[in-house]
Image (cartoon, rainbow, N blue to C red):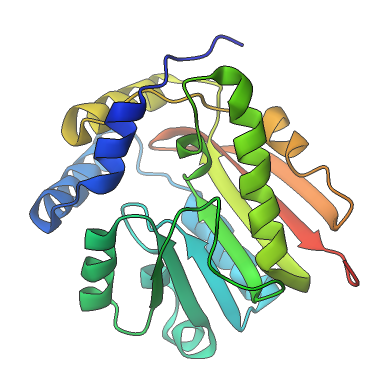
Length: 233
């Protein structure tokens, strides 16, 4: 598969810069784009269904994206779940703290998560994997394997992992979305994995019932992977 020219300078700028005004404008543009391209978005139903099935008491969202998943939870789930977010941008942490007082936040890189082993019932990552990248294509897989291993480490025995990201299979809507994102946030290029490539990151003995599937969104082709951590590992 052809790989894009990763731009570390643009990625660093994208991660380190945050403006609440710019963020809110982008959310408005996202709503308009969603209605213009395709109003369907299966990410939220997949996530809410998975949480309803697993019923976590303590969970982590790695990276808050354009909207913390916490916002779409039912009031009952918000009361039952101790919700954590790990975000690399300190300005965005302040924004989350101001707008979502019940969320516990930590500022950290995803490759060195500041939590102990077997800490969460469920660990969620939505649209973060493609940011775990490198201008040296040979280093990308190792970094992404470390990312998944960190998710595994902090997940409790018999706990679960849910990972979502853009598929390497491009569509017209995904090309348009990434153009808009790069134009608005000055974000660089990324090396996007296919579902098959991402599933290979989950080939570890502590994991069982690993499942993955592609699906469509207004942002383009996405995939999700779920896995349970075996008891005693």
